Length: 272
Image 1: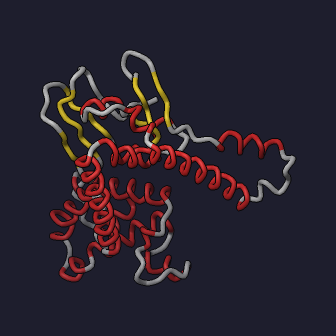
Image 2 (image 1 turned 45 degrees about the vertical axis):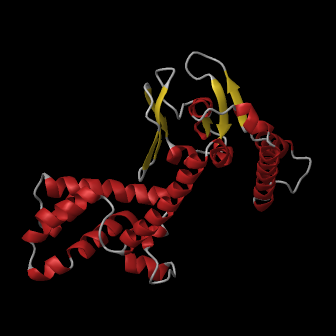
Image 3 (image 1 turned 120 degrees about the vertical axis):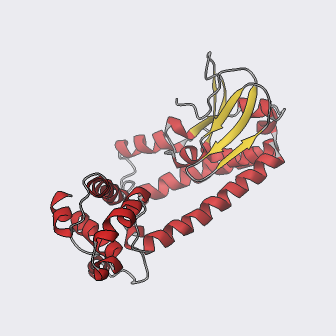
């Protein structure tokens, strides 16, 4: 099980909630940094080892006892709700896939039995990872219990992520790329070498080139073909594997412009 918390001393210097967008820090005690990677924790698959976090160091930092959290009637009800919702989700998924048409299907029973119960709490012993580990489904509830300050900062983090997501959508809706080094290379190297007309459509032309390489058509053509609203960003409709291909081509394009000093469209088209 991969730890979301890194500690090398008994005392805790600070608690940091780290995401790609935000870092929050707690405390000023002697010791080492305690890192909580909230983004990875929340994005981990429900059944994966990465979906668990050790709350023992956090409880110690806020002078709380983990057993008191689990003894709370409100926590008990919340855990029961999570388990019920999880079972319901598994069964609904089976129905949608037509897997439970035959109640005697042994394979289906095995699938349901395997996913039916979600382990919300795991206690571990050992030199490095000992402590009480809880599932990410329970983490926000724990955050609201362990400290008012911790709860408040979690709410601020969520608000920040939502606002940042809106900014990402705005960026995607424009012709500029999300890969910032490429944007800089276009601005500093590509655009100055273009004609006056080429400068106006530099981002659009390169964005179309990337889309043609990945999906075989421009964003406009893709929207028409798939009956997508004109105001919707095509990148918001792409699955992850397509976005990864786009990212790879953007990095490739950046290398040719930044280090190869390529400023001709035809040459760049052949290279990527």
